[in-house]
Length: 160
Ligand code: SME
Image (cartoon, rainbow, N blue to C red; front, top):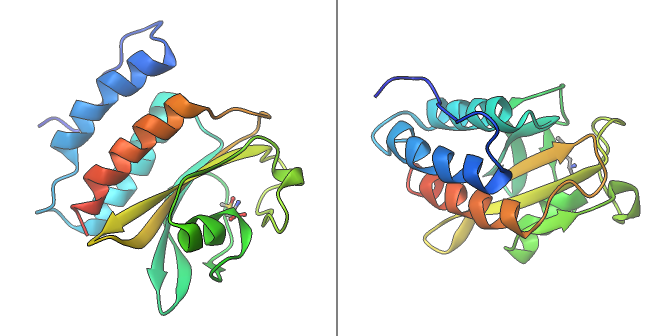
């Protein structure tokens, strides 16, 4: 498959996700290297949606450790239950944060980040990583992002 993502001009958010999903299914192969897949996935999401920050934290030694991402430099390690990512890991469910300043314990890697969504990635019913997407706009994420980012997380769960 060609390493190019094609999205029709003037597509709605749902249409973009609908076009992206099958392309990611072909791009993110379990037979390929995990880091390569996570790097390509973050690049594809950044390219299509121009998110402020998009990337992964991987569960290692009872912590979340920064993985491949696109955007400004970020904190390297998050403890369980800390910040949005650590809470998502602990609760094993997606969290949408319309205003990060109103989320108790939010870890501010970049003061430009205003809202975020964090989606757990499961393998054998355990959270093994989280997908973290940040926006410089308030209330940027909704149930459509949750629906499709969870589908993308399911593709990635097979790659670990
Ligand atoms: N916002 C996250 C920290 C990671 S950065 O946004 C990249 C959190 O509170 O978990």
